Amino acid sequence: MTTSALEHELILAQRMSRLGTETAFEVLNKARALEHKGRNIIHLEIGEPDFDTPSNIVDAAVDALRAGWTHYGPSAGLPELRHTIAEYVSRTRGVEVSPDEVVVVPGGKPIIFFTMLALIDEGDEVIYPDPGFPIYESMINYVGATAVPIKLREDRGFAMDVDELARLITDRTKLIILNSPHNPTGGILPRFDIERTAQAIGRRNLFVLSDEIYSRLQFEGLPFSIMSLPGMKERTILLDGFSKTYAMTGWRMGYGVMRADLAAHITRLMTNSNSCTASFTQIAGIEALRGDQSTVDTMRIEFERRSRAFVERLNRIRGFHALMPKGAFYVFANIMKTGWESKRLADALLEEAGVAALSGTSFGKNGQGYVRFSVANSMENLMEALDRMDAWTKKHL
Image (cartoon, rainbow, N blue to C red; front, side, top):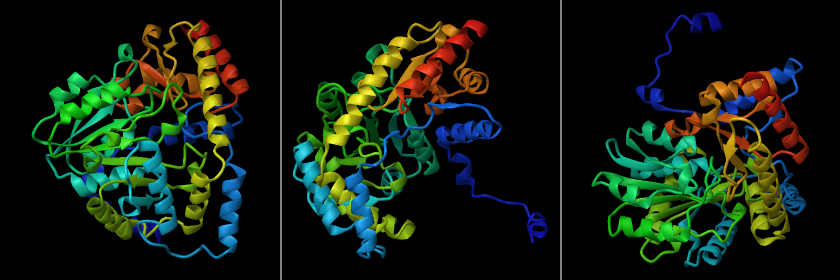
């Protein structure tokens, strides 16, 4: 009975106090609660494409279900998908990758978590971007490591300062996290900076977790991976997946590419946690990588078009200013001239203007003074959101 259960205090493990969250889902729940009360909310908070999964991928999944791909598969992923991913990464990163260097997981986050569990001990240091994807810092803290933020500055286009990175590397550094194109800023790491990052690492025995989940959504130039540089493949864990590229967020499928001996340990973590990734979704993943890629190009072009229109209009609103992002589907707006703190402003936009966005502090302490907007919504809704924000600022600023 519930009553008797509540007679006993819930005593959580101490490590649970170090576990963070992803604020986007909290704001989404709050926005949906307001909608339940009859409010009209424009959703610019959640980071997922508003496109449907391409029909050829859906058809492949349906066919797989009917063909009986509904049972357990290998913990590291189906051999054919791992082979397909190895071919794809070899082609796009210019390095030789074999299937035993690929681990398929349900979403991108397990690669972050498993990397920390496999490599990081208490007291080790992990360098990560701030502002940055909040799960980086959450997982660093959860495993008892020391989180070492590297500040991303607007005057650098939110690209990491490699000289600062070099100063942050110590004998206790075990992992450096890179993310390009970057969430939440839309910035990218140019090839020159990636090459200098490898030089700063030198021959040190540390790993790089290169989060390239938005690599197919880069607007300017071709994406470049630190894995592609001489001597870096054996020290790089590449994180990629299907959610952003193919609008497959709800399918939960990502992968990591890493040296084979580490892949074996990451696979053991998969066995102990998830057993395996759903088999029919992996069959669909093969079609995603081998099939028609025109929908990816369509999405990238549309996200760039929306980002440009949003930034041009946003920069005419009092107190707001944003750089044009170079990838992904986010606009990271500077709101310092409003005089409001980030969370207070994001809360007000939701509750008073009906526009759901995320406080920059959801992405780390260096996000103070910023608000993130996702442009993964229709152009009509984006312009309506900006009209509402403009009206709100005229009333409150």
